[in-house]
Image (cartoon, rainbow, N blue to C red; front, side, top):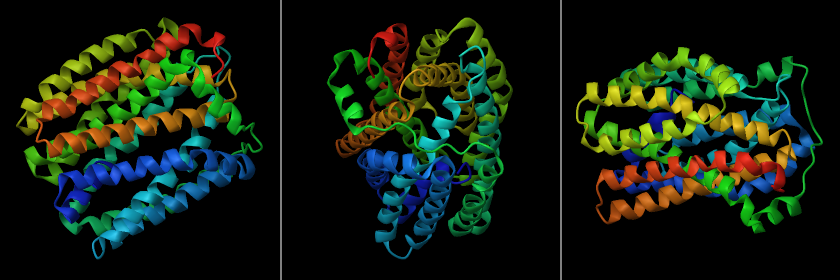
Length: 364
């Protein structure tokens, strides 16, 4: 997915010629995640972790295939958005559940999250550069075919391990009843903010970069270069957070908020690269403690239900951000206003620390 991730919004733009259609596409994705999460949770409980991950891989291959057919008929593009919305819960529910049970003796997750981010960044750093080269040399269709092959192969390692959980606790009533408790809203807003910021960085930012640079190869190099240079920090950051606590998240939020304020004025590849490098470095000290706190809390709660609630709220945040960007584009607001949603998302995300202080008293 690292090869195609930042280019999917641009592919939608290439097919439709309308910036607004990019955010409509992602609105559909997020709406499907929210609508299907309860049902997917029940399926995951029944068929187990490994089979759910394999379903996700096949759905991902189907989604990428529909993107190819979207060239001939835009109906396939929108069908692809629906399929991608199903991929997300089928993939992330098993992934996060497995992490929750992988804690070591200290009961903290900073080191585990740090390890995951190292592996993730290796793939994510290589991906955009290769993806950009493939697009320039062979086009989007070849890129999607390569990604389909990798998607089909990806669940094979899951069949080789000894962990295959099924029959997790699952109650729709427990999930819905927690929405009524005001004490839970700090973590709901933290998840909502994460979803908002994800849209602004993962979609709006790369659309802005493309409009400034107009070069897929350079875009891939910018993304890959920034990710590679942050790679070594991830492992150290995870262990440091386990020892010192997640409080550095607040400093990271302030620094990256300032970064968002400056980004609308960037016009050259070198300045964009510098901004993205700084952003990625600081983001390690935001999202590593953020994820560590989430897993620490989830380990003490009804795990699958807690993970499902997270996915619903994160994707509600993504849906809300896309909807607001659509309005901003229609009203011809500047990129400063759009990137302001990223700042709002960051500040909402920091509320997870407030929840951590008192979460043992809550029934989330």
